[in-house]
Amino acid sequence: GAVVSQHPSRVICKSGTSVKIECRSLDFQATTMFWYRQFPKQSLMLMATSNEGSKATYEQGVEKDKFLINHASLTLSTLTVTSAHPEDSSFYICSARGLTELTNYGYTFGSGTRLTVV
Amino acid sequence: GIQVEQSPPDLILQEGANSTLRCNFSDSVNNLQWFHQNPWGQLINLFYIPSGTKQNGRLSATTVATERYSLLYISSSQTTDSGVYFCAVASGNTPLVFGKGTRLSVTA
Image (cartoon, rainbow over all chains, first blue to last red):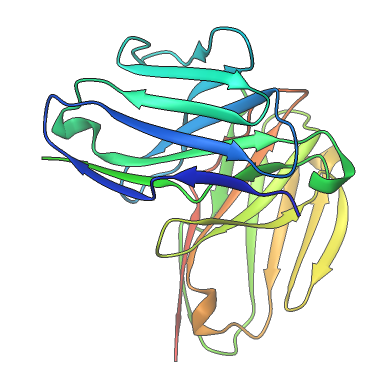
């Protein structure tokens, strides 16, 4: 089936530093990818929609200058958390929709990145 | 936007019991998926089911699109079924919107 690879799976960083998270579709092309954030014992909340070759679309309340998204190819989107602070500690997970039979037209998710800012 | 409500929020079962999880949504959708999130956070895609009925082993799901709800059935539950079950929907090319989930605990 369709596979979305996300790295790193876990990262601990110091407050004020930046962290980059990669999301790759391994066996299909994804013109659109989505980034979600999940706080403990809560649901997944959409942060932004990443479009290949164009600017990302951010949900209300998400700071675009803090969460930089780059979708430079049909198989790779990156999320960079800039100047991270402890309140940015969360579980970040990406998703891609493949418009082929391989993906059954559904959304496939990466394995997530647990970010801890100390 | 679309609203997704899941019930019950929490469920405790004895091993071997059956259960039904419900997902109500507020608008027409062309994509509905059920996920199981394991203790490590990974989302496992259980069903892509915008309409109709599907079965996979001890799990089955039914979506009645005209009435805007979906049901996930778990039969003969096992401790490994524990975790959070999410229903997520989308309309057109919009991203998936998630419900708040049902937290299932299966005890031996």
